[in-house]
Image (cartoon, rainbow, N blue to C red; front, side):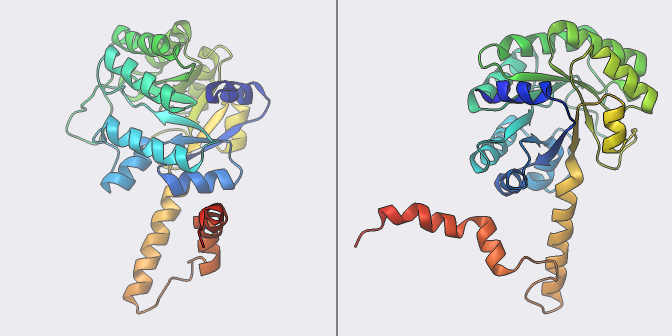
Length: 286
């Protein structure tokens, strides 16, 4: 069964899908070892890890694709939702992006309707006209037929154009064939319910990490509202940054490691040193 079909089967089963956000090999490996079947290759996490900064449309397709390759190589059984962002250009760029991730083994890809490059401010996400957004999703659906990759259509227009326009776009994306729908930045529970209804029975995706000007239901509340998938972009990234800061502070204080550091044997096991020795043994000469 292909990764897209495995994801479809997972979404057809009952239950809420908690999808951790990953950005590289070790984050993907740890998520898989913790028992997660899926992961979201988050653009904000990749921007943080590669650029040391916020997600403001500065990460290129090549950088995102390289991060995807690292994640999939480290966790080959994980069903990865790739962040295709705006597709990196027009409808033809969208097709190239979708085909590349499909051929590489992604289970799904997110395509959104914001204008890029955005204005030189971190506030707000102006979005494409509705019909231009439709053509991007139509192009993505057409390109997805090659590999079967699942298309997640996202609208960012709620803050700038209102909930009515956002709901209309979700309905439009359903008409075009998107299999997962995503309303970014809902203001409250009623708006989430409207978006879920507009998805017409197809799974609805949400960001559930704290922060941002959006409604942030708990997992149980999200499930009760009809959401099907929840991702947490800061769920691993924030503790990882906290751990790095703690390690640096310990070194400044003259210590060899912070109190939060893993014991050396656990660290070696996590990184796979014993497994490497087992795998290498048949090739040792003498």
